Length: 325
Image 1 (cartoon, helix red, strand yellow):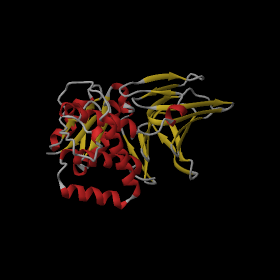
Image 2: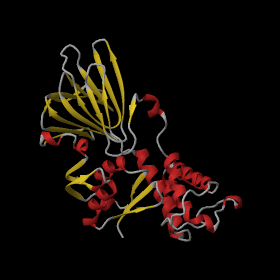
Image 3: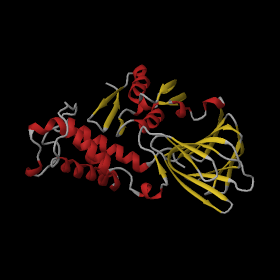
Image 4: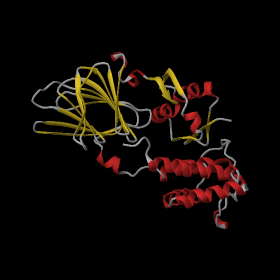
């Protein structure tokens, strides 16, 4: 396992380059650096090319808001054909439009919709009662697929996180699969979270067995109440916590215990509309501890950033850029 999703990281970088070029279209040095980045990997060039194509598409859109977007857009920012060059009147909303279109064009495929039996949108939570009486509480922006057959009770966590209250049945083990990680129980309550190339399992009560099914490797034969397992980069980390804090998101809370700002942004992004782009990696590496209100995700993000001199700026309704002055 790796600590970052290369495709997602490349999409973020392409979007970041596009924003920088729009803000400084006459910066020759910036253009040279962009050319070098594109030349370093054909995938980089393809990602930026897709970003530019979507930018051109925005010239054909009609405005949906008269808000004053903070992104300064200029018609010579990219090489647009004359018919597609934006007029001054459109410059106020075009930044928002490109952000929204980029979000759609650079998003993962629609295969998740086809695989999932149950999904939640951003800011939405949902409780599902399965055929055996087990309950799945789904967090925002999450998806699961369910397969009950014979003696098997199988659930796949496709995105996000979910809390499971499993009806005991020693003859029918309950399995939760998240990426390569498989959690096996007969009756207990636990949370599973799936992030890019990372899986977290925490137990409220009872115990679970955690394994890497792809390597037939047992990660924990008995993860018990008050224990949290994180599997990342092929390493297993087990920490203790208060069982009452398991899946704190169910209470509208995000509890951070010495975690990076980048990690917290990933958590909060589930509750914010659109895309959050972190432009300052040194800011993202800062560690924070605190309890934040998921019912007010924008305020929570500001509370995370403020002590470290960071800020979050809205570039239209679908893009939030995090940086330091």
